Length: 464
Image (cartoon, rainbow, N blue to C red; front, side, top):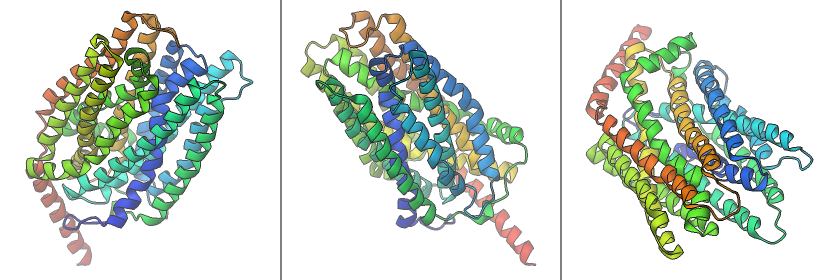
């Protein structure tokens, strides 16, 4: 634990980031492959999967705030965050394995029910991990730039796990096109391996990290009041909208890359490499965004990252008009690199800015409710993915999509509209709105100074 004048040790940074590797692997593999696994392997209708994902987002509206509130108010020997991180392992593991290992004996309707329970269960269990883990990152330092180091490490670890999931995706896709391949068996085996690794990384983090005792017992007794405070915080309201915008683009990658690569580009086995071209610069650019944010400010740098992301995705709309497979591959890989570079900015700076907004809330209310804030932040992230998956399911269904067949130009245009134009419009709107965000380094320093003075006076009073 650190004060505003201390740097976070590398030991703490590594321990904090470690479980994000497992979470990134599981979350991205499910986000990338579940829709295609369901439609092309399990033969579940795309619209049905869209309904399942929409049901999951509706439940998130209940589960995310509940976990955030309970996490803020938890008091155990492990602390209010590590307790939840540890407890999340079992339901995450069960949900992830269920998604990719449905029993062969299930009927069509039974398979739909199983898949719905598995998908909703997995995303609910991930909330048990993500909200406390993000909250812990904001607590480990209250320094304006040290937070960016913490969340930069988390983003690096998360993307590392996501890159490892691409290896699994490569094997799954090749198994799908191999003669006599058994995708369901391979998916189940990979599920078991992921579960074992996730358990190990969580145990390592829980054993190594320490929480700040002065934050215990400083949450609102009323969940309604806690989330009312979040919504009434003007910085938080704007940030939540921008966060939703920020994640629409990355959700487009997760929801549609396999379809676009297969049916528009015409090179389905290249999908893992295309996503790798997005993930690698997203992770590798973290050391670039940290000094840029120190020099130009987190807000200006993040704004530039949004604009670059929007333009990169918007360019994907041109894919159907490019003549050869080779040229389409070159184009989509180039745009994926640019989009990934910009994504590294949002992944590093976004949660760091949320930590600053939480300090503003403490200045107003005297409470520390990271859980409530990151629950809202997590909800809008998953909401962006849910919107893309819901739209993908219904657009594919009603544009005339036929699994494993050559698609019409109508279907191809529907795919690249969701993949390119929709994120572009969202990012332009989000960037325009974000120009109104005023909680910069100077404003945060004033808040931090007032909070430190109040804490010093409180300690003096207790000592006297």
